[in-house]
Length: 340
Image (cartoon, rainbow, N blue to C red; front, side, top):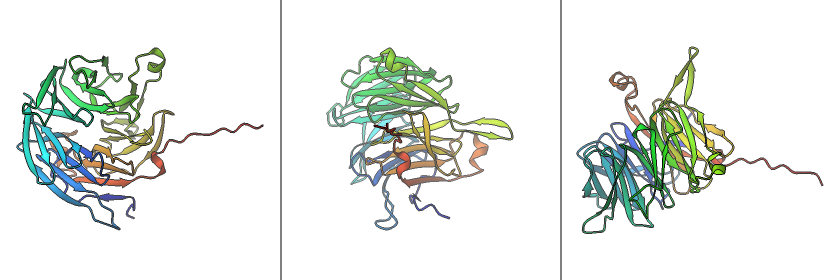
């Protein structure tokens, strides 16, 4: 029986979905980047009203690893050709902003600073003002290749190779405010900042998630922890899967995780509990995003080369799913009433 709370978008990418980003102000619009060299712009509709449709498609020269919105009608993209591009959604025009010297692996846009920050395998972060005649404003060298970037308030968290993390204040990108090593033993696969600005979650290729906090005080650092997830027991053998994506709910600050075990779970990190695991998909889940009002969760499903070339032929195809959310994303607190 079909799930009434789950639907799929038409015209999905032909290859692995690398990133999903919802519009910052429109809960029904999203950008999807892919290894098929495209960035697609969708309206995620409702079966009872305006149906879902692909509204625009931006073709590139190489695989796209990352994308983001600056506002509801403009976005940016970056990928294997090392180029940052500006996407004008209404006209489908593409303009080059600038470039790195290796693949662009992550980007975030600060509307408060009117600045785009991009990270790359060339071991640098670059700060861009797309409106300026010379868009590149600054370059910051990082100790390793950049894998992921996310931002909350003024804090930019950069996950790198060798399990390194730098935390920057976007108002001063010249030196990191904090430098850390991952709490996890294996390579960082995903990163997401908390909606309340207090910290971030990171996950590894070895089925674990760590919850971290910005405040360096011993009392706050004592709250950080890590846990196992996205694992299955098959024939009495523990199968461990990468955690490919994380996303925090914009209202409740709970978070979602997606793995190569083809599952998506919702977690309450404050009480260290899983709130829900959704029905299993037919392929790994590689991307996640909540919309701006927290009523929908988008998932990017498709083979992501964890098993090499042979796995590509076993279950081809991709899917962009939209899940309508209910109480499962809300924080559950037990209220104890004491007698008078």
